Length: 530
Image (cartoon, rainbow, N blue to C red):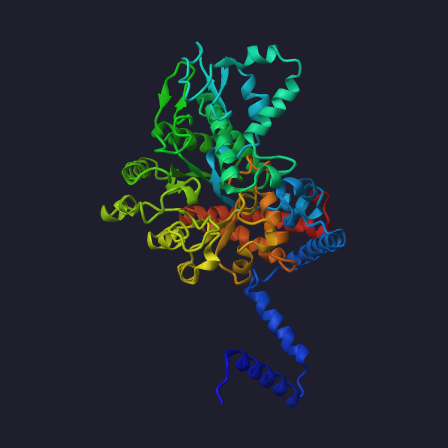
């Protein structure tokens, strides 16, 4: 008699149960062994904890289990809620307070103008002399520092420039106006599900926020200070090292809707502009100064990026520029990536002629491709995740579609190429609503190579890396993710960074000292943990 697949599994199960009964072996022993093996597969499952780490883990998991039990009773679990509505609950969480104190290693997926809370831009930068603003035809804000006033903008680009100081003097309620600026710099709203009905709407607002911020941050004095303050914010959140995607003054953005609206060059008050080398040199100098003043901070590196809306000729020019910059700034220039909404841009395969240039020239230019940041399956964009691997990417940005591609999953595993998971970004930008259902959950349960990062925390109303670690630990990792998971994710961030072997060793030593203190404080219930 032929057996169907279902019948075979039923027969196998009966055979196992029958065997257990015949041997008088209790089924619960088999079950415990199965659960133990599954736990060991989870990220961090094979780590052996020290005695202090075990004590710390007991306290951490007691708090985690208590929070989850309470969430079940109230049917109010932050990772299952939109971040904008869950943020207050997260900040009240005792687990979150512990995660803020935890040394996290590196943040490897960040964008240059999304790393610093926007309050400083509103309360400090927009109050500086010679700050002008205008409105685009779409109603978006643009800013520009200039003395005298900027030349009259083209009607298709911007309305008449207005001196912000003069405008504020005419207002009856300046606070209300400043709050409206804050809203223009972030996506935060009370009812995001209603306001952002689909990905097209949320991405338009997302890129509009960068238009508003770019005119402020591209002003040379602000450019330097913004980066330094961004480093400070991550340092205070116990991050030891950063890698930033930075567009470094793209000349144009092809046919992208905001190509004529985006301030693409760092500029001075008199209109002087700077090129990519100046920007990268500034990043390098500011990072080195910060590391010198903060010995337990390793530094930052830049992943030069271009917008994926641009055509192959433009991307080829950018790749050539990236190679030149890597030669001139080997310590700071980590590699190259393409940014922007994947579904609206060119696929990696369409741009392969440009992306293969380093290989044809025998040049080592590491790639860190965004890939698989889409819900569509079977499109050329969805296949970016396979093409990223074919093009020898070093890491995969987001990798949201990884679970739909068994070959990509196998290659990523066998070649030890991690995905950069950004939970809050994926939720806010409409890829997943309940983070318990994030595709990374199945990958985390099998120990797939991954790191956790925060993408553009400032635009999402977050700060540093702790909020994303909370979502990953409480939601994506499931109830049983414990200190081992957190430790492995932190170690992964150092392992998969673009640092040299020697720098990784130094970074791990710095992290280990901070980790040991964190564990001791947690195990002892130290006041520093409160």
